[in-house]
Length: 179
Image 1 (cartoon, one colour):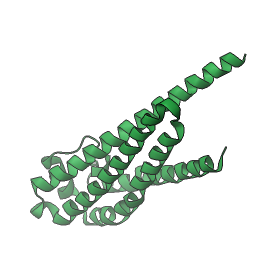
Image 2: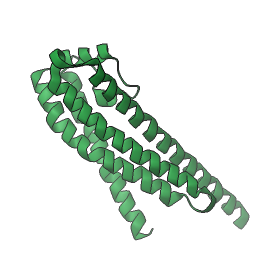
Image 3: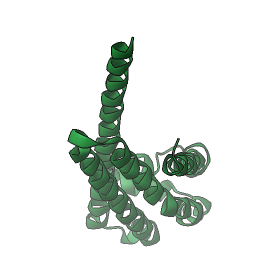
C-alpha cells in the first residue's frame, strides 16, 4: 500500500470517528433535549416550517447550548473531512476511462461540504432567532442547504460504490485470466 493510500485510510478513520461521535453521542443528546425530535442535521429530506418551529420550541436551554457549541463545533470539521474522503477516494479509484467519474464524485463531495457548512450557519441563525424571530424564509433556506448536502453526498457515495464494483469486477476478470 502506498503512502498516499495509508494517509487516505487514516483520514477515513478520523472522519468515521467524527461521524460516530455525532451519531452515537451528540445528536442523540440533542434529540433527548427535544422530547425525542430529530435534530436538523439528521433530516436528509429537509424540514417544513412547522417541523422546524416544533423542534426549536421543544429544545431545552441546555440542548440549545449543546447544539450551538458541541454539535456545531464537531460539524465544523466533519463536512471537510467527508469531502476529502469522498473526493480523494473517487479520484484515487478512477483511472483511465473512468476518470470522469472521479471528477463527478469530487465535485459532488465539495458541493455537499459547502452545503453542509451553509446548513450549519443556517441552523445557528435559526437557533439564535428562537421561535419568536424565526421566519419561514430562514427555515426554507436551511432546509434547502440540507437537501443539497444530502443529494450531493449521496450521489458521491453511490458513485464510489459503482467504482468499487467496477474495480471488483476487474479484479475478478483478472483473476480468472491468470488461472
